[in-house]
Length: 97
Image 1 (cartoon, rainbow, N blue to C red):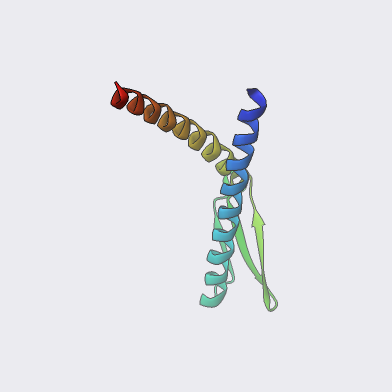
Image 2: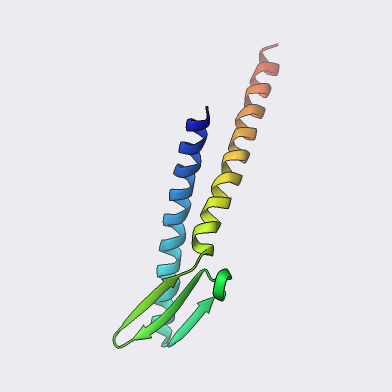
């Protein structure tokens, strides 16, 4: 049981992290198109990402929150999905009776 829980959390965490990275890349590309030289979402320990333009390319620095956010979202989504499946099972059992 604990291994299944860890695997589910890792699966949801990886999916959320990939979505977050794709979103950050799209946002950074939009900053590059607008001509901004530097932009940051958060600061120090609370930074999600920092966009910097250097020469003809842009650099994205990821912060600690870009790792913490997917972990928290994975735990919450696993909890919500387990509650939803339990409730669905109870509803099906009540319809049969």
